[in-house]
Length: 320
Length: 291
Image (cartoon, rainbow over all chains, first blue to last red; front, top):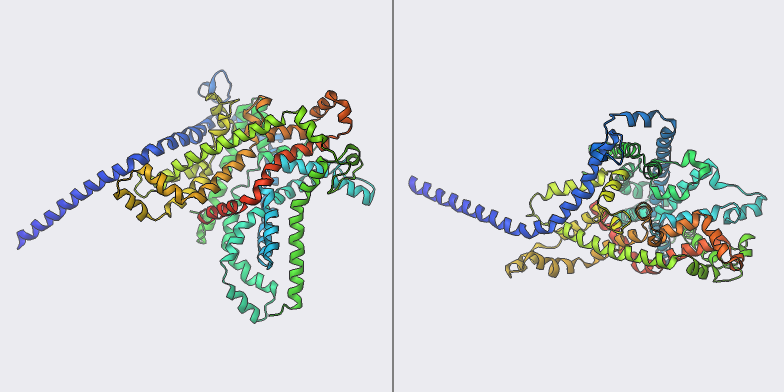
């Protein structure tokens, strides 16, 4: 009996070994075409995404063209000492934080409000038209939006100032005063993005059970109460998710928007890291300073995403 | 159920706010159209609102004759079409293997790719790389560094993952290779999502500004974004135009030429956008559900 048992086990084991060898073989055969397919992708990501990361060593060197990245002399943290002691560059970091924080926090509620309002529309033609128009600015680039803004607010011929002049008799240099420039900057960002960002919330709203509203209506809850106690709580997971994603962008003021809107008069509030990098790095060839600033920006961005995701994960809503 | 008074007020206010928001998106564009078709005097006197005054096509004809807008339009088309084709090819090549459960190291590779979305090398290192590859001044500098967008890659990957495996197993038993499975089963089933991703890439290329600004130096190779931005920002182009043809220029203001330039850039978008809107929205949703 015993020997028979052992024999049976042996048989099963060898069969399994054979099978797993066959499985490995089969897996390798199935992988071959996939590996061939994926090879160019590996090359792409290494060459264009990972190799430049090593370019960050320039941040700790005094880069010059003649010596190249490897040959240029090391300077340790000198570049950072310069960046963090110079009032100009500190101002640029401050401007970046101010403009991006305003964009993120002031702009954040708009898509949510739009989605809730759109969700209450019952006439489908009205909903379709407003959605089409609200999504449109997302597809116009900053050159166009910047052009629209400059034309609307210019002093001599701008539509807004024409109206103002007719009403009050005087015009206002909106684009040349720091306060109104910031307001226009933030508002144009909201104008461009709010409609499109509402899509995510709209999708989340469709999953709310309509019977909740019916029941609330029966119990005498008006529209405001329904929105406060049903719609908003149902949107909460999406709102938190979008908030995390937005926080990750806090150091990142897009180059295009600032570049097309800024003018020399408002440089004090309008110069940000990306435009400074462009001017100092590519314009005047001070690669080390610009790279040091770039590394600082990337690290802050990464840290913010990790921190916010960590917090969200504790409440079970993290991204990963 | 009859709406209560409170509900009536709520709906009225709601429709009013939304109509206002929607009009705020439409009216600036209408104003630009009106400016681009109006005469000099009406514009300087600030009489142009939403309808052209002293109707004239001069701004457009000057734009076409005296600036390189036709060439820039062609450049934008080339950048967009070639760029999108390359993007699609390589995004599919990246997404398919990563979507296969038996692919070696699929998790590690996906993580390594997602990391590049969270941590980027920044302007100068990227510029130095493109320069050392000899791509500066070349449209390759616009196409290659952004060959695969991680976001679009993830969208496509998750779509491929949801295609039922039985279909492929059946094909495999019939002796089809991996390439044939992609071409005959996976791609035909993914046409809607592929169209959506192609549209996203296409819009990004059509609107590309920064990369053209830093990598392309020859004005003859500028795309519409950079050309129009130069027109908006610089006075010199306007004085050049004035010197070329003082008579015609007296009838024009810089505003009408700028508006016409903006219109040339917006128009293709305005024409295709209403038809493609549903694909865009769909794409946004696929991405966010997975995201």
